Amino acid sequence: MSTVRTARRWLGDHLVLGLGILVLVYTFVPIAVVVLMSFNDSSKSRNVYKFQKFTLDHWLHPGGWADGMGDSVILSLEIAAAATLVATVLGTLAAFALVRHRFAGRSAANVIIFLPMASPEIVMGSSLLSLFVASGFGGQLGFWTILIAHVMFCLSFVIVTVKARLSGLNDNLEQAAMDLYATEAQTFWRVTLPLVLPGIVGAALLSFSLSFDDFIITNLNAGQSVTFPMFVYGANQRGVPMEVNVIGTAMFVISILVVLGNELNRRRQEKALTL
Amino acid sequence: MATVDDVATGGPPEHRPRRNLTGYWLILPGALWLLLFFVIPFYSLLAASLFDPDGSVLTGYDVTFHVQNFGNAFWDYKEQIGRSLLYAALATATCLVLGYVLAYAIAFKAGRWKNLMLVLVIAPFFTSFLLRTLSWKLILADDGWVVDVAQAIHLTDALQLVNLADGDRLLATPFAVIAGLTYNFLPFMVLPLYASLEKVDVRLIEAAGDLYASPARGFLKVTLPLSMPGVVAGTLLTFIPATGDYVNDQLLGNTNTRMVGASIQSLFTKENDYATAGALSVILMVIIVAAVMVYVRKAGTEELV
Image 1: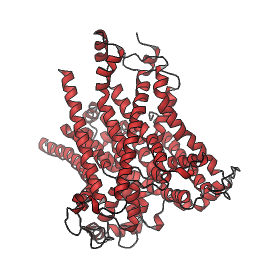
Image 2: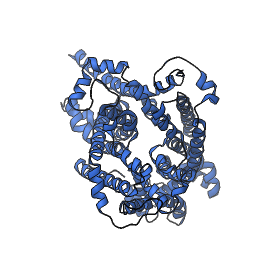
Image 3: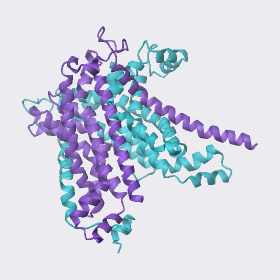
Image 4: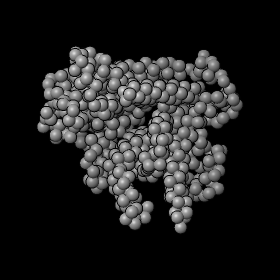
């Protein structure tokens, strides 16, 4: 009887794990397709989105990329970098305020920070467009309006991420620094900031991917500018050039490397602290 | 020396938050940004929804409290609104099933692979959302083997019965749109589910077993109720963005799968009909807020924010 039970338990344990892994595999199927298609030579018939012949051309000759794609990638990178910088700085300051300080309106602030993450993009995007048009900027949609929008939706994610790291921190080390006569500024720069840094880097990385990838809000507020997601969306109507998959693959590989680096750094730091 | 605040918030006693003006200065820039570009725009949207529809971007609009805009927008786009809610609900339900299995496996069965699996859950976000959606176009294509298998096991016939597909196709059907939504929003379901499953005390599940509850009964009476906050948060984070999405229906659907987001987008940017677009956007927001309130009350959790 006990063997039957152990067999059943083994099956129970591994069945759920196996099903979970299957779900994970399913989430990676489209990514495998993106990587595969980045090596696809589709020069014969552009409108067929199908693997035809292996080629390294798209990777080796960026000069042969479809018209406008390079520019759209550069615009997206510029916006993502600027939005990440602004959102990370403002968001980190706000996270410090929310965790380390008590002030009136704190819970109202928490609600306003939560709401952008729970609102449909189409509503946020159309509201922002209404504001721009109503205040006379309807004709100047472009880089700056996209940037404003991206900082807006990245902010909440930065605040939540940094807040999580900051509130998981106990202040023993900071107390120790102060006991050893470090000034408040020295304590902040040499103890607090390095401890919170993995959270800040994580938040910046998240902002960068959110901004680089955003389509719905951007499409409403971009005017004549074309970001990379907008280029892909537009290309869908004409037949997708395979080069877009090079960007998708490169993004994926770079992000994974940065995440791994950040994680290793965090582990090394934690190991050093527990010694 | 714990302050009243610490006791009230249950915060760690070793850390005493400071109460001075610095807090205001630190949060001011971020709060101002959200106020200017998130809160105030809702007012602009509401104003736009009350525009006199005879105006145009060039001549300017008059806010004439043209309440008829709402009636007209709702009547003209009721199909798209209904479709958005239906597709989002079906996608959310599928996400809940798939996401629960994955979150449960990570929380209780993954052992030392837990962190790796968590990273893998968010890893798909690292490639473009549009490119991943385009990939589904290839996977579900008419001459692909996925369609062949679906036909062989009569999946296409079954989908046809419930009106989610037409003919022997998978691509350009409601099924493809719902599958795309499910795929794209799955991580938003898994993460909150995992967060609340991880907090479940395993001893409670073992206790249920010791008291002769079958594993299924233990799950239904102990694990599931304890994970409800995650279920509620996950369904909201999936349902809300899915309702407003239009990328999936534009890339994977056909003209009969149009969702309300696509209508709002084209009213704003192609037809320049700000009055109807604004009204439609406000209607969508009101429906979502109402649905969320009813749902949260039924599910009985208030620990969301």
